[in-house]
Image 1 (cartoon, rainbow, N blue to C red):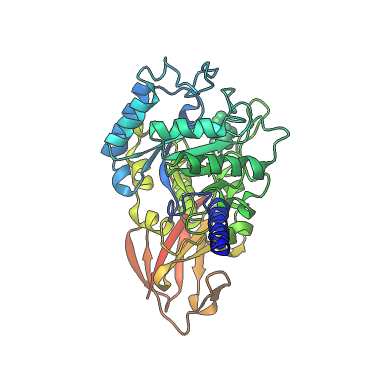
Image 2: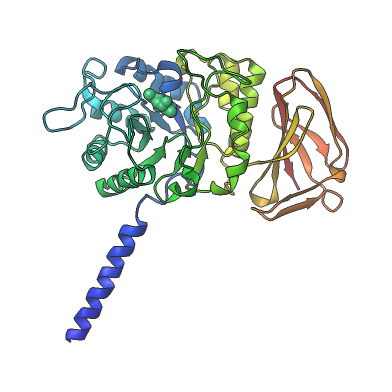
Length: 405
Ligand code: GLA
């Protein structure tokens, strides 16, 4: 009897230990890269309830929700400069006169999910109260508001261990009991792709994106990364992404001032990368072109493909790069990027190439298998891999093909 209860105790202990060791995140979330909108890229800290309600409304009327975008995320700048006397964060009453719960309810009433931002350090990047030392309290507050997504930044984190700080917040979210996507925003400084999959659903792989395709302009002594700068840092970490855990090359700059071809290329490349798709433009003032890019369902289906693998760079010569993304059901997406400063005629003889990828065990010899080609941006079928692909591609532009048997 004595032995039996000891055994029971041991089983119980093991079960508890394994729950606390493994149940760090809500596993079922983000099986495909999360899609949504975030306030930062356009508004920085200048956000308030009327503006954001307008954004929620156009999220629906513009077709973003129908295209698959789900999350509505407030970035930095939503709180007061100090916690209240009980140590709770407070939504800025000037910006959110009805409080954050009421705003979250509004987002939910439209069938969207609600996200919020804070920071692992003592203060956020914009100087508002950070979460350090308040992890469990803040997670409980977010859960009580109905938060579904937390972006967690890395400013003012001197002396903190990144792995531990993010694991603590992940545990706090878990303990608060409400399923939330946990988006680590540590800018890739401590190689989160190697350790963060147990904590969160996505982690930033680089510093901040700026609104430029090739090269950004420095402002106040600081220079964000361009679309191409970020692209070039993704190839070596593709093996770390997959369903439920994604590399995050940062939010979209589509509709924020780049040329049409650049926006189109940026969006295509992010879809090829299986990137989280967080629009960052003013949805209320979206042009038809911007809408047509952000809601391109064929591109989105490449991003959201169930296999959940990132593209790899297959070929690079004279400013032409070819990216290949294996898709479910033995399909493929192929993106031809012209990053040179002149239009180029690209001709590609499928039969002269064998496309292989160790991660997905893809090995395609086009002499053995013929694929049909669909040009996604031109919205037309363009024959098969039995004949040469030949097209002129403009500078900083792409052609994206879907290959099916
Ligand atoms: C950092 C993040 C950005 C944004 C700002 C907010 O720079 O990387 O995405 O959240 O902070 O201050």
